[in-house]
Amino acid sequence: MALSRIDETELLLPLYAGVRDEPHWDIFLARLRQRARADAVHLAISPFAATLPPPLPPIAPDRLRPDRVYAAAELEEAPPGDLRIMRVAEPGGASAVLAVSSETREFAAADSALLSAIAPHLAVALAGLAQAERQRLRLAIAEDALARGGTGWSACDSEARVIDCDPVAARAIAAVPGQRLRIGDAEAERALAARAATPDAPPRAILLSAAPRLEALLIAPPVAPPSGATQVPTMIALLRTPPAAGGAARVAAVAALHGLSHSEARLALALCEGTSIAEAAAEIGLTIETARNYSKRLYAKTGARGQADLVRLLLNGGGALA
Image 1 (cartoon, rainbow, N blue to C red):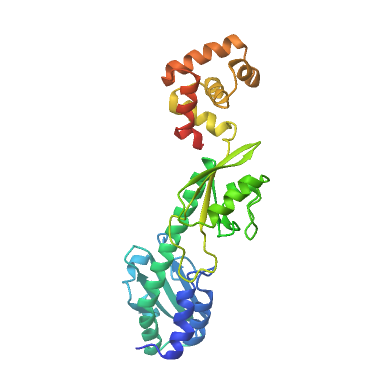
Image 2 (image 1 turned 180 degrees about the vertical axis):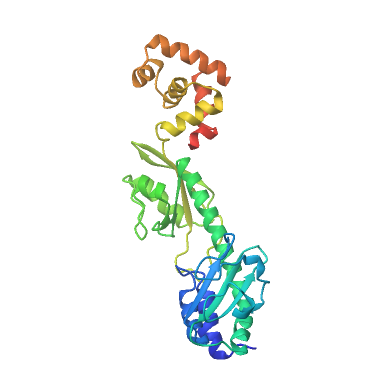
């Protein structure tokens, strides 16, 4: 059965657009229920449990051969009334089970044919959803990694107006979409504006703030803007914020990575903040003599040749991301 022009408009357009909806495909499912004159339409997306979730029949999804439409009479576990159900799989491994059910109406061959005609389109939409979910996960991981390292970014147009930014940049420089970056230093703001107006300029380092000190690297966008974009970034400001003081998770990570005791790890992180032995000892409640003994063990266990080398080792290691 070929889908009619009305079906293409009423069913396929919401099906493809439904990848961006939340929850997914609500409009498509409502339209399909009307089109099939069903009491209910159900859609389940992998990963599945051992059996399909209610109100679908409690059967193992693998029992449904992909793209084949099953009638209620073929399933012992089918609920009262009539049912048409099929499983659709996409090449990446994701799958979905779509079913229409009715307690008062018996479905006809045309209803099964309708589901069969929808199957390849549902597979394409399912592949789009799987790709979008993978990209969403990758983006979330990347943003978390950048935030843990104190790295932020702000995208600006040719007049140094903020188009977009991440939470780190928003906190550090009050980057608000739609507004120009305001640093408080006239010379720095002129440099920002000049760089933003020159998309092909080489990277340029700039001091955004002297107190607290905040530096940034102004670069060209790493990728071209999407076609039809109304706001085109011409400059990306990459910035680093001062590392947060060592919390419990960071202390535990440094201790585990370098075989340190809890107190030794606390001392190591205190030294990384630029404090002296005496200041670090007072901060964590040690005598100066105890702190000196700990520092000797720190250098022996980590292999650092002094405080500067210890700072380099810890700030460049995985413990800094905890």
